[in-house]
Length: 160
Image 1 (spheres, rainbow, N blue to C red):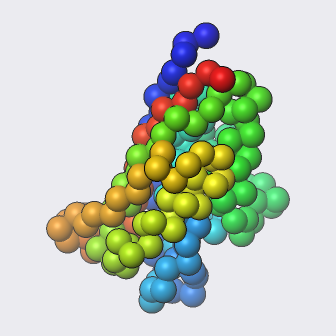
Image 2 (image 1 turned 45 degrees about the horizontal axis):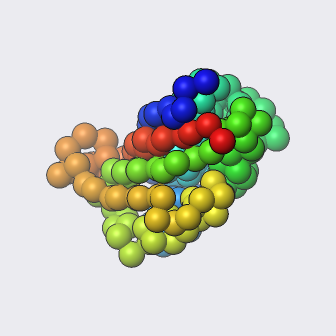
């Protein structure tokens, strides 16, 4: 078995009125929220994909398809915890996670510490093993026009 593996994940959700803006398991006060089958937590979805990819276990759509009523409105932290269980079944442990959220608004800097704590708790690692950054796209593209939010994550997992 390879002693460590690297994964990458990316996700996008559209911003709409009438939904909560949940990012990294934190409900961010904002005029718009993220739309999706689950709670649409773009950051946690990118992290799930990175972890699943590192373990060669497919992607979030394979494990939690949007056509499955069981996942309608589900808290994405539950999805992340399930992904970590899948890794544990394959004898993998999360080494670290580095993620970036791309949006013009809301401003996320004051929430990243709580996001890291949530992710670390769900992955059964220490907060210092998780890094979440927020950036704008200088008003370019769909994120720059505040039509949606994107997130990207990379991770390392290793054999127990």
